[in-house]
Each structure stands twice: as C-alpha cells, then as structure tokens.
Image (cartoon, rainbow, N blue to C red; front, top):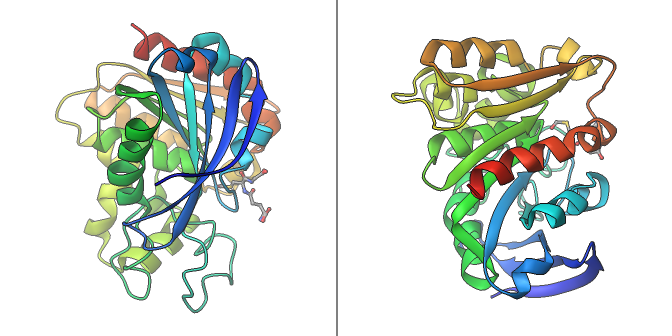
Length: 282
Ligand SMILES: N[C@@H](CCC(=O)N[C@@H](CSC=O)C(=O)NCC(=O)O)C(=O)O
C-alpha cells in the first residue's frame, strides 16, 4: 500500500512523494512520482530515473528540471531512493560510495548485505508492479534513465529487461563497473570476489554479449570536465567499444566544459525526455 507523504502542483501536473513497505527489502522505501495533466484522463507512459551515489528520491525532482519536459510530452517520472535506509548493518554508513545511498542496483549475495540490499529486484519486480498497479502509469510503455551510479543502473536494468524498459538513456554512467574503483568496491562487497557474478551487473559486459541489438539506440551524455571521468570511474569508451562489438546503436555525446553534477544533467534533460517520448509514444 502506498502512503502519500506530500503532493505539489507543478507544470499542470503533480509532484508526489510516497512511502511503502517493501517486501523485497523488508523495510519502508520512498520514491517520487511526477504525473502530467494527461494522467487525470488515463494511464500515461512512465520513465524511471535512477540517481547516483549519496542521492535520495528527492534529488531528481528538486535538481534535474525534468518536470517541464515530462509535462510537454505527457510522461510520468518515477524516481526511487538509491538504497535501503536503516537496515542496521554494521558499517553501512561509514562511506559515501558503499552501503546507505549506494545500493548500486544489484541484489547482494554476500552477507551481511544479502537480505536487505536487493535494489535490482526491488525495482524490476516490486516498484514497477506497484507504480503501474496503483498509479496511472502504463506498464507497456516504460523507459529508464539515470545518472552515474544510476546511469549504471539504468543501462543494466534496461539491457537485462528489454521487454519491460523499451527506451534507455544515461548521464555520465558508471559504464564498466567491473573495471573501476567504485564498481570494484561495490561488487566485491555486495557480490563477493567471483568476477563472473559481476558480469550480470556490468553494462559493457552485458551489451557486448547481446544476442540481438535492442530496437532503439541508447543515448548517453558525458561531460568532458567531469572529474570522475578523469579518475577513470566512468569509462564511456569501454561501453562505446562494447556497443560496436555487438552492433548496438549508441548515441554517445561528449560535452566540453561540463562536470558531473546536476547543472550538466539539467542542460541536456530536454533531449533525454524527447528521446524516451519518441520511442514510448511511437
Ligand atoms: N562525496 C560527495 C560527492 C557525491 C556525488 O558526487 N554524488 C553524485 C553522484 S556520483 C555517482 O554516482 C550526485 O549525484 N550527487 C548529488 C548532487 O546533488 O550532486 C558527496 O558526498 O556529496
């Protein structure tokens, strides 16, 4: 059951914040939803946004400036939290890139994380069903996008569930997590040292092994002044090479001067919403 925490009229629609008891995670979880005016008449296409390290369900609706464009195209926007909260696991609040705010959109298999840190199944199995069952969002017309850790989440959830998420895009995604410090820390912590188990959550590995390319291009934007790009946390070139290998169509745009933050994201938000609307409303 959904508990409505707050509601705000914006761009002719409503921005809402919800809490619910998650069966997958075993704790209360929060998410935000923007519903355009068209949702008053019936189900509209829905776009899931996965946020990055340290973010919550509030980051995207307050910083990305997406509601204006979603209202123009008649799309709903759904933004979940980035991890379980208050799981009571020793060490979960010790670092900003692991544990709380850093669920990495995987189902942990390593203790003590395995029971609670199940963001992959929470999203694919539980939240999609909840949102499309309880709100005027059309399950047949869903897309997914995200930023940084959430860009990794959007690429991996989208590549693994092409029937569910029909359109994919990302801002500065962690595009090859098995090969960067953030991903190595998260995957060894949540999944253990068996690198074969990491492949299912690595966008570059997944796209290289696609048996059939997805019917629509994937859109990725990357700022060239992004300090995490320089630190080799993001590796868009690995994803680009993997797309070439499998024949997956990719639009990768590199933007001089833009950094990793929400000023960058807001600058290209219109293009991302238009990318998804063109596919979901075709
Ligand atoms: N350590 C800092 C920086 C954390 C940070 O940059 N988070 C990014 C995502 S990084 C990859 O997933 C982010 O989106 N931050 C939110 C924002 O509002 O910019 C810190 O703890 O803040």
